[in-house]
Length: 97
Image 1 (tube, helix red, strand yellow):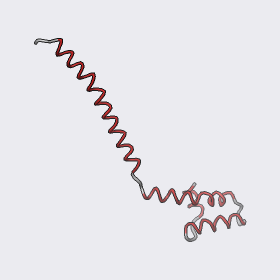
Image 2 (cartoon, one colour):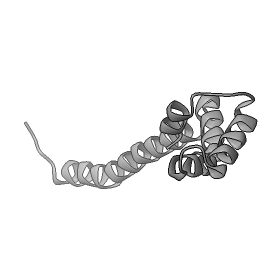
Image 3 (cartoon, one colour):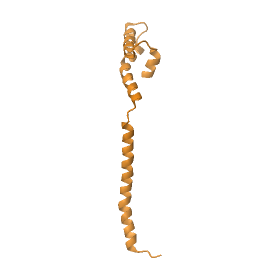
Image 4 (cartoon, one colour):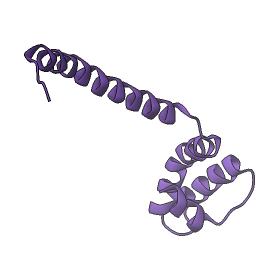
């Protein structure tokens, strides 16, 4: 087997230039795929987040109000308006909060 200094130097240069380029391309591909996964819109999650945002304040008011008080009734009315009818307030507010 005949080893030549020129062959060793050539191989070292190819490795020194090629390895960082290959690693950076792999990192770029990984970054692009992660950003595409994040940009995919899930309509179910989006709808539930909007609904939770609307119901947060009325649920907090309902949760801290005294039973049979004006504040409780107003909070229930707000929840009913958002939901479009009467609901189970404890179950709904547990889901929201």
